[in-house]
Amino acid sequence: MQGSLKYLLPVLSFFLSLPAFAQHVPPVKDTAASLTCTVGQIFIQGNRTTRSYIILRELSFRSGDNITLSQLVKAFHDAHDRLVNTHLFNEVVIYIKSFRGYIADVDIDVKERWYIFPLPYLKPVDRNFTAWAQKHYSLSRIDYGAKFADHNFSGRGDNLTAWLITGYANQFELYYNLPNADKSHRHGFGFGFNYSAQKELDVGTVNNTQEFVNADTIAYAGKYLNKTLSFSARYFFRPRLKVKHTVNFNLVSVSIDSAVTVWDPHYLNNGKRSVVYPELIYTLNYTDVDYVSYPLKGIIFETALTRRGVDRDMNFWQLSTRLTRSWPLAPKLWFGIQNINVLKWPLSQPFYNQSLLGYGDLYLRGLDRYVIDGTAGGVIRNTLFRELCNFNIPFTRSASHDHIPIRIYATAFTDYGYAYNQDSKANSLVNRMLYTAGFGIDLVTFYDLSFKLDYSFNQLGQNGLFLHIRNDF
Image 1 (cartoon, rainbow, N blue to C red):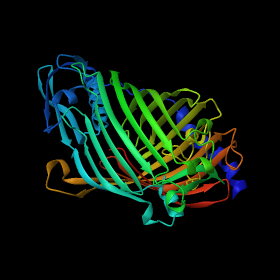
Image 2: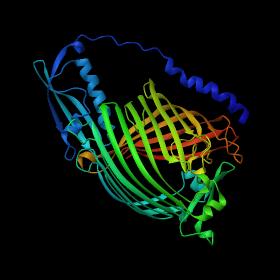
Image 3: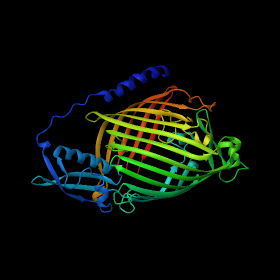
Image 4: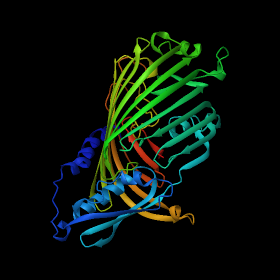
């Protein structure tokens, strides 16, 4: 299996990449579509909480604009996608309500989401379901508590989040973000703080798996092995509809128990047991897709530059890029590429700064069991999507939640990855090309929730069934 997969992947990847080179055939220009009209009144319905100017902010046209009908139809489509991608609405419909001569009145109907979620919190602490399965689905590895979130606190698309978590770890978090703070709706701000205390901490990576130390099993250790306290302030700038800049300043305090330094003297720089450092992160984001949580058409590009620390105790730079590009190939058939790259500098870093592949969204499908630490690397994921069915399930009598939309896709994919680590000697997956392939089923529903069930193969000759759950809301 290992040998055949090695030669099959480049061929399959090339085949999946062919749509990128397909020629674009311009549509035949329709005479009626080229007629010019004037945008009249814009009516908005269904926004009980969301302020109207937040919706108008996502439009590329205004009342009084002279525009051809074909351009107006495209503007309707683009505005629909942007409004859906605000995560404020379940459904958006934009159409010409009526003509008054050459004046076209526009109607925008929205179905708002539920914004307030005072919910119980119950979640495994492990990085994914596969890692939790390796711990035999132990209930002792569950965090529980309460989560309160208001995703449209004042009707301006602002978010207020408060978490109170206990169980396996203790965590308290409070954040507020207001992306539309001024009259131009281009500038915004945010602030918050986070406190966490962990009884168990991964202090190293051996044989490509996390090595944990648990306070309950170490007689001389304190109650918690790690305590982190951080304060943050953010500035948002959105000069154009598709472009957003974010500057995030954090002040972070980290302290670890002496047991951690016994297991790994290089967990922090210079064998330190505590460090306080400032962190500055600049992010540039360009978004032009149909649905940001599960894009089938369009492009997302994001790059971020991070500076962590100012002295030898914490000396860390990071440059990261993320590109997602998707194309429709035929009715109900799409192809997508995602490329994520990370460079950390200096290349020699303490274990605290070395997490790379296998954490968060930076993983290869089929290598879910493993983590690959490093200071430089990335992944390329190629996916073919085929829609199997698209239907609705009756839900409530509420007009905004009268049904649950369900979309199911069959997928086939190939992934490539690489992680460079000049310090690692106990892990076989670093400093080598990694590749996997497989197929799966994706289920996508409202509130940006998706379930991905994949059967994957890797270059180690291993295969298995893996589940990933994503919820951006």
